[in-house]
Length: 315
Image 1 (cartoon, rainbow, N blue to C red):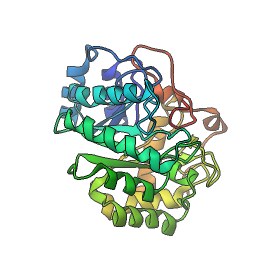
Image 2 (cartoon, one colour):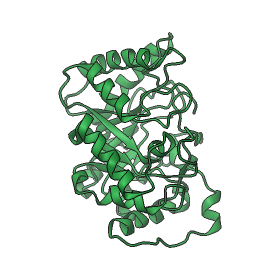
Image 3 (spheres, rainbow, N blue to C red):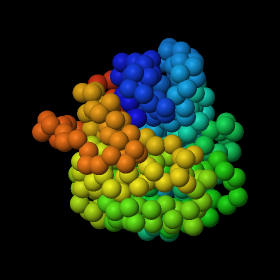
């Protein structure tokens, strides 16, 4: 699960153990601000040890929503590179081996033009980052001028970076795939996405799957997460992805609504039911659909949260 850390890292770690998470995604700082904390929080070392002892791994850190690797306008391009480098260099303090980031927006320069600054940023950031930390680029839903809505575009980005080994990886968000037009509602459609990624990029680079349903219609180019199996995708395609034996080495993270209201545990149970082949899923109460995921996005020491829009540069 992606769990909020407003109450501190240890609160998130204990909640992860309580509901049975075997992997965890967090923010290391406010995801809607440029300024980063100069030092990790006081409970970072205890958090790392707790997760190690409880077998909660890997730990992923989701980088700030403000970062835009695909843009060339200054000072934002430099700020984006510096912000992501900060996350990569600070990752060991959180026990994190994965730093997940949205690719960003070309801001009207065209998709091909947007790939060049991303590739250059990736190369320079990896050259200055700890060897044990992978940089994970997340697909977009395709809204605005975002880069990386298609698997083909992600593959082009990988080619553009050149020979950098296995430290560059990717995240496929199922709600983003749906928003971009991929058929994630059927088993055949969902497995075809895995096939295409395997063909063009290779599953060894699929470090993360963000397992989310969507409130949006297919190909809407929008990103509005919903409880697992209760949105426009429904349970069938999500179950096919969960049960695909090729993805045993891929980490699944949910970013579903109402984490602070106890729906973290509800959605984790729903994922396990889907994995076990149990359908239909239990009906959710009406109140479950009046929640959003802002509570999962709570930064450390702040009451602010991200929006549910999901598009890079629009949070």
